[in-house]
Amino acid sequence: MNSKQIDYCIELAHTLNFTRAAENQFASQPTFSYQIKLLEEEIGFTIFERSGKGAALTPAGEQFVLTITSLRDQMKRAIEQGQNFSAKYRDSISINMMTRCSLYFLPEAMRLMTDTHPEVQIEPQFLYNGGLEAFLKNESDIHFTLEELTRQIPSIKVHKLFTSRIYLIACRDDPLADKDLITEEDLYGRTLMVGGGSPAALRAVQQRLISSGRIAYFNSHDHDTTLTNIAADRGVCLAPGFLNDHSGQFAWIPFDCHESFSCVLCTHKNDARESIADFVKILQGLYREATAFPL
Image (cartoon, rainbow, N blue to C red):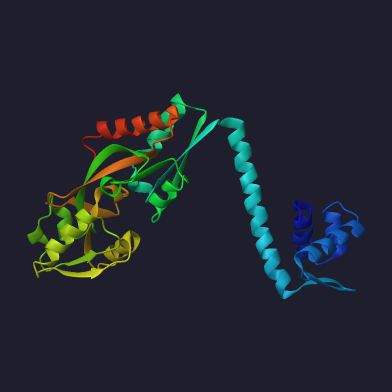
């Protein structure tokens, strides 16, 4: 099966007329019909039912055309991306993280990297789950994570980035939103959402609060679900500061506890590219200078 046969098949599926489809593809009808026949012989089933009125897709043909249309679109995108890359860039660095807001200064770092390394393309990847596994499979060059998750992993370099504290998330009109610091006592009689793959430090705080017996709680599947529940006034939650998108939709109030999160970047030990080291330094510099920024 070649690209021309794919184009012919998709065009015939649109027109259901051999003559018109051949004309649209600038081919003679015998050549067009022969290529469709070769394609059906290769895949082993009939795509089109022929009749004096034209052509009709078989049930198997309908599914086949849907699939190859998607494949053709993906192929075109891959070619376009390759052309863009070859025309402007000589190197590429991929960085994965849980959410877009995990690295608030990433856009600024990308701009600064363009100034010093215009030949290097930075490709963000957002993987709510499985980011570390993708990194270890060499599917990304840099991985944003918590330092506690990097222990005893061989062949990686860990670069400290910033420390993130724990915040209470509440609706803007919640009485707690007026406070500068939230204490355990402030949450008595309230409902706290927990779970959703919380890091160890956060789980420890949640368990400490729940064990007081004065705070109701329920499990929330993930961070987006939790935010939806907060907007619906179903409760409040505690979260790492690096999940704050700074959109202003919710109030993020510091919580009074000693627990925090050491956020790091991981790179592959055998990746000695200067561009990788420079990009990591740019990000570290931006966070080092942001002493007044809530993290």
